[in-house]
Image 1 (cartoon, helix red, strand yellow):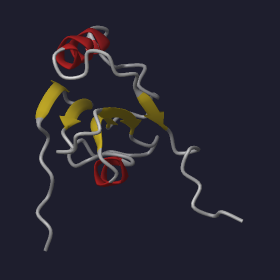
Image 2 (tube, helix red, strand yellow):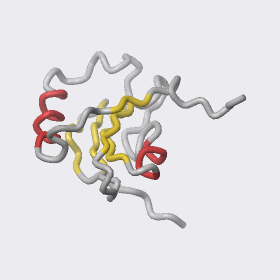
Image 3 (cartoon, one colour):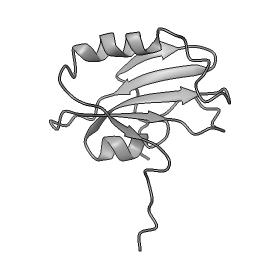
Image 4 (cartoon, one colour):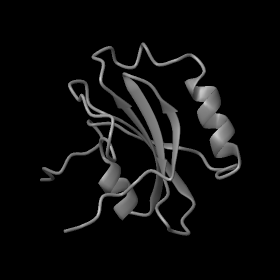
Length: 108
């Protein structure tokens, strides 16, 4: 059994939202942001695309929501908290956004 990956740092946690940072333990220096799918209710774990990100050497900021509001209820200071946290870890990296439409495993 593979042990679950625990967040390196929880950036924000509330009743309906959680933003976690996971370090890939890679020297690539790449950072990926993911957002859990609309009907997700889980605030634990890696979130949408998390295993893919870490397995491919990307550090991960995982937005997870238990509210069906497309993150409209996310606290207004969330991005300030993320920016402050990441400033010491990825000062010059440009983030990569992974959405469900990005992953298409049915290649012709």
